[in-house]
Image (cartoon, rainbow, N blue to C red):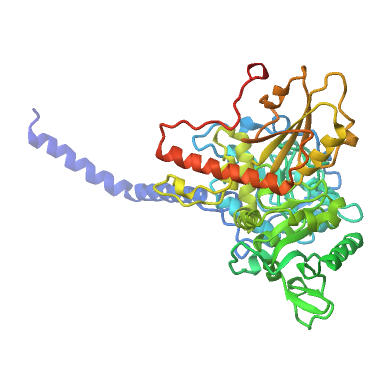
Length: 588
C-alpha cells in the first residue's frame, strides 16, 4: 500500500491545474453538444409539415399557404382508367401487411397548389370545405398514418369532389406527379359530382390509371364491382338544418315529390298521379314568388303555397327520388334524414354503400317505366313494414350519410373489410340499428316480432309446361314486399324454357334451374341460389293466393320463429328445427 503522503502530493497538484487551463474549452464544447441535441430533437418531432400532423383545419392551414407546384405542358397524363380492375388485379394487398388490429393505414399527401405554366390553378375552388372535413376525419381516425412507408392506402390532397370545378387534363397531370402514384395503385379518389354537360358521365372523367374511385353517381356500366365504392352525394343541408325527431307512423301525405328541375316527362306523370289521388300526393317545385333574401334551396312551392325544406319531407310516408342530369342526387340524403322512405326511380343507379347496406330495408326501388304504377305499388306495402322502413331510413342517414366524416370513414371501413375479410363487419353490424342489451347479451324478450325484411324469402316455383300459368304466378309473387329471389325449377327435360325476353319483368333476381329428372321432390333440393332462411315452395298453378296473403304468411312465420327462439333461450336443451331440411332429392 502506497504511503498517503506520496499519493496526495501528486493528485491534488495535477487536477486543479487541468481545470484552470481547460475550463472554458470544456464548458464551450458541452454547450455546443447540448444545443445540437436540442435542435435535432425539435427538428425531428416538431410538426413542421402537413405530413406529420393530423391538423387539417382550414383556419390554421389554408391552401394559399401551401407550396406552389407548376405543371409543365409535357407532364405525363395517366391512362383513362381500367374498367377491368378488381382488388386482386389493381390493388397491392401485400403493401397492407398483417397487423394485430386488422386495420389499414392511410396516408394523406401534403397540401400543394398545382398550377399550369401560366400560373392558372387546376381547380377553380381549391380545397372545398367538404373535402377538408373528409381529410380531417381521416387524419383524426385510427386509419391515419403520417409514415408514408407504413401506408396501405393513399389519399391525394387534390379535391376532385366536384368535376365542374376541375380542369380535367391538368388535374390528371397533378395526380401523376404524386411521389407514390405508381399508376394509381392503392390510391383512392373521392368524387360526388361526376361528368359534365352535355353527357354527364356517371364516373369521374379525370384519367386516373388504376386508382380506386369512391364515386357518387355510378351506374352499372361504370361501377367496378368489389373495387370501386359507391358513396352518397352529400347534402349541405345536413349540417345547416336540424330536424326534430319524428316517430315512425302515418304521415299527412302518402307520397311527396320535392325535386326541382326534373324531366318534363316525369313531371307530367307525377301530375297525372296527383290528379288521380288528390291530397295523398304532394307535388312540390321551385318557388317563383319568394321574398327578397329568402334562400331558394330552403323552400319549395305548390300553387303559390310555400313550404320549408327539408322540414316538409317529415310530413310524408314516401318521398320520390328521381334521376336528374346525374344519377346521384343529394335529395336522397335529405329524404333519409327526414325518416321518409325513399322511392328511387333511377335505372342502373348503384345505391350508396350497396356493397354492405341492404336497401330493401329502407327504400323502394321502382323501374322508371313503372312510375305510373308507383301509387299502387306503394299501397301494397303493409303499414307495419312502412314504419320499419322509416326507422331504418333515418338510421342509415344517421350512421352513414349525416356528415363527410361518416361518408369518408364508411368508405375506408368497406375497403378495410375487403383486405381483412376474416375480421370484416357482419351483415347485422352494417344494417341493424343498436338494440337494447342486458349485460352484453341480447335478451330474447326484445326479439323482433317479424323477421327483418333484409333476408326476405326465396320463392321456388316448380313447373313443367304451363307457361301462361307460370307467368301469372311469377307476376303475383313479385308483388310481395319481402320477396328476395325467385327460383323457377324447370322439370321438363324434353322442352327448353321460354326465351329470356318473354319472361315477366320483376324487381328481384329470377333464376331458372333445369333438372335432370322429372321428380316432384326437385322443389325441395337445396339449390345454391337459395340464400335466405325462409323458402316458399309453390306450384305453377297456384294462382288464388294474393300478395297480401303471402306477405302475411311470411310475417306469421317470422312470429313463430321468434317464439321458437324465445323457447330455445329458456329451454336450451330443446333443439331448434331447421325451416328446410337440407337433403338431396334422392333422399326425400
